[in-house]
Length: 235
Image (cartoon, rainbow, N blue to C red; front, side):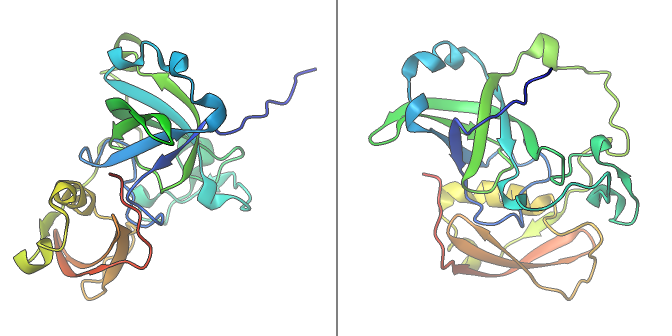
């Protein structure tokens, strides 16, 4: 008889996203995004990371913590298809899955010791909400994990990229080290794919800010930036 696998987080990731809205649809789309992996006390063992510094990228296995309590469905409506076509859940990366696990490939930026946190890992391109549980960290192996001739099904590429316009007086409100990351996020169109109202104003939390914007055709215009009530900033 097969034994049921029980897993628990080995770490949690700190990101600039307090909520799901605005998070890139896939890891690596917004390369300038930074996330910090903070291990649970039981796993703050330096020997467990020995040799990791030799790799440029990592696989993160994580949990859709914001979707806990929802049942899985055998078919879902991928945003890539406008939310109007159903596909099998195992043909998508939908969070509404039997086991609610996500998989992301991120860049390894640095490994450092921090007082009170032990050894942490700074990564680039993470597509997760702040506080997401990490169940495992594995090295990305280029000769095995890279398949140039792979076919992408109904999602063959990253999709359209928007022109982002931020008025200078608003851009000054964004910390300089966060500007490129925010532009990356906005360029990949945070809106649901089926929403195309040019008059609608959208809002998203990012790095302790509330960013509001509108999209007309292929141009995204930031209309307002304010300090958010909830601050979460990856140092």
